[in-house]
Length: 347
Image 1 (cartoon, one colour):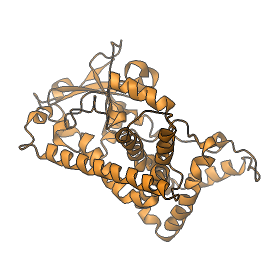
Image 2 (cartoon, helix red, strand yellow):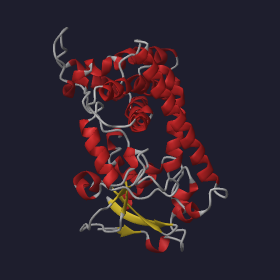
Image 3 (spheres, helix red, strand yellow):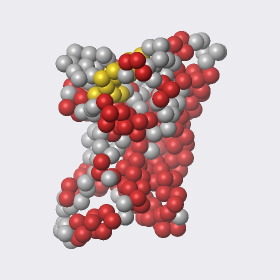
Image 4 (cartoon, one colour):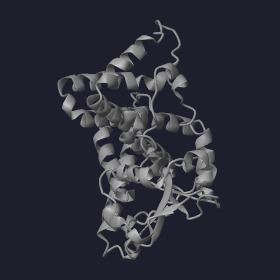
């Protein structure tokens, strides 16, 4: 059953006045307790459906992307693979990625991500021991530094990577650029649209950054000093004729992967630390659980499944789009932020 807010919505504006700009998912979770796991609302003429389980249980028909008003070419541009619609370009990139050097470098083949995780984790532990109250910043530095090493073989790209990631999130988030809420503003010419000007500047800066990273790795390879990285693999495999992607495609494939992992991957760890502060009794419970596990000896294969029990990272505010009819919903746009699903484990 789809529950509408009905008379509680104002004409044209809808319930926008009741959607907070910060921690929006908490309001969605609160409403799910009142109205059930699936409900819809209209904001400035656009119908949004918030659902808990549809994206996981019926993902085959919720796999498209709608047009993001402040990024109107997201469904067709090759610059953002994660934002592409299910178009011919998406199929092409999917086929390329399935055969690409990025796909062929799982942890088992790359010495557990080139051991970059363990190297960066020591620094994180040191920072946490010195200034634990600044844990959010420490974790963001940890995740961005790790993904910077994986992508381009060096940690010094991390600062600019974080800036670019925040810029992209502001572009696509409903709580960032106003046209993502008031969609008709996306039709303004660029000289009148402050938000489009900001996005154009952000995109140009990002492209320049990706080219710089690519050239840095290329120069390091030529000088024989390149550290292991996905970009190094991309360039070496291209030299061997194993793929036909151009340099710009490689720059954005590696770059957007880095953006995807720079900050969002840290959210489970940040949530865990916050939860342990509010519910310290669980620290002892988890310690007992860990002590019951078999600790591997040197050289023994590690079964990571017995150590890690966590939910996936929180979804970004990028909506999914319904490709076909559904017996529960045929309205079109499903807001993936509603997959916050369960905060009950914190209670």
